[in-house]
Length: 73
Image (tube, rainbow, N blue to C red):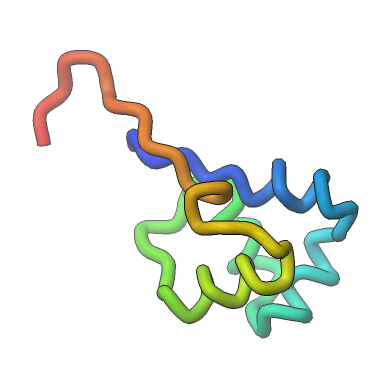
């Protein structure tokens, strides 16, 4: 998938653990892990907003688009 999730990068910059972030944004540690590993099929705007608020960042700091080589949509 050409969408890269960089939540772990921002977590490292802010020195926050997965457990703490999950608790503060109101999701399970399992669901946060699914998002961090790029296995999530979707993310709610409310969850994205909560992550940005806790990590003091912008959505663009968390998500990155890298096109596939030669793939079609």
